[in-house]
Length: 442
Ligand code: 5AD
Ligand code: SF4
Image (tube, rainbow, N blue to C red; front, top):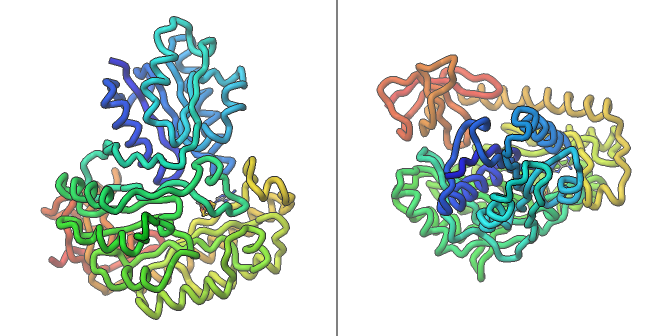
């Protein structure tokens, strides 16, 4: 039996896709190993969203090959780099990879591997094989991902993106939006509940653009919430443009839907937002935040921000600062703009904000965010939160559990006699910008 080692980079969708790949290959008789040195096939499920993610993969390929010179190991590239860098990957003689499969081609993996195997040619000289066709239909609705037992199960309800934000490579690497039927999603949620999962996180590149024959994302949340055994429902990653009132009401009112919304701002200036093709203005974003907080004042809000987008001036950057100060997000992922091949920004705009300036801006925003996160977390001290215990905390504190509250904040508690998957009530006694600590009170 051939042994496969898979390494995953990038977003949660990629982690999920790795489980799809494991399921597809497992059914075709492949075995898996946690050790790359004993693998016959090494798969790298790659990310292309920013340049450093790309570079990590290139250095990893060299690293694997140096350790395994000439021993016939087959290397396959999956994920977003597969689509976006197919030519470079296949034609670069210094990168002797054997096959490439894009995000919609995983069902063909056994065949691709079969075609490059058994030809007796060592790695590098073998004929290369690839399938990076993007599909308008593939949702893997008939593949059960090989999720290891746990507390949270991921479930991709839609794939692809039609928004074409000008900085983003995803519409090119993952193709058009398509959604699974609500019946199919609910069936899978029932199966996962039967396996003991207590929380479901619905996934999609634009999860709240979900649409299937007249059913929208609000309908889907309501249907999923009827499944017994599932106590918490989360979703990621949404786009601010797709939050109609009814969806906000379902999130605010349905007890199973967690009170947490990721709301990627990207920038706080209207000219930059327009160049990014985000389709909302600063005011529309702030109005949405107000509407959310009117419906549910304690909603936990997180965001994504890009600094140093082409032509962004200091004054425009300061408007991002102002939006952050106005909203006070609970957490934020802040990125330096990274030019991506094929994107509209790469074709039309100069990457003209100097690296040192991008660094200065990102440092500034990270400092602001740290202050806000700390402030928000300190406000929880003294409260009692429902916490779902997820895993042993860290190697350093083996006597603690790491759990999450409804708002997805990490809560550390002493283990006591509790078990993973238990719901406990925790009195919060301490906070840092990143975690809450407390003791179980029942
Ligand atoms: N440069 C920097 N950040 C990017 N993101 C997407 N594309 C780029 C890029 N070219 C960020 C966005 C998005 C998150 C997933 O990654 O903030 O919301
Ligand atoms: Fe990229 Fe924009 Fe689509 Fe998100 S919505 S995946 S940032 S193009």
